[in-house]
Image (cartoon, rainbow, N blue to C red; front, side):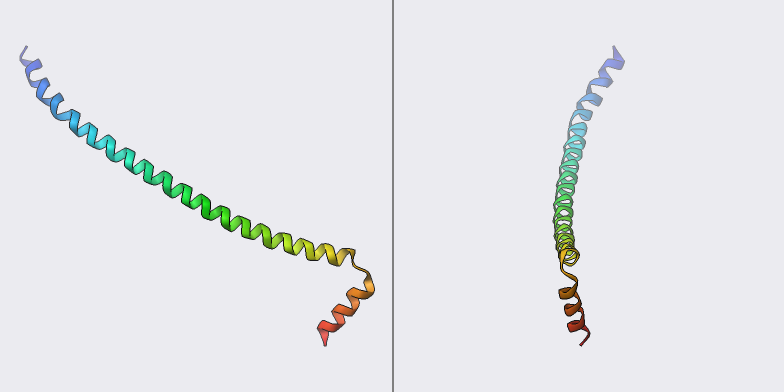
Length: 81
């Protein structure tokens, strides 16, 4: 019976300690998720900008590929002078 008497105060002290630790752990996890979401949004914006630049380049290449040879030659000559 004596060992049960010592366990009650130990358990009584452990409950608030565990509650504090769990609250802090949950707060850290929430902050971590916020950082991951913000990082993902920034990556999406950067990827979207890169995609737009690539689409512009592809459009230029398509125009060059489908353009008549004479017009392209004239434009190249203009750039040389």
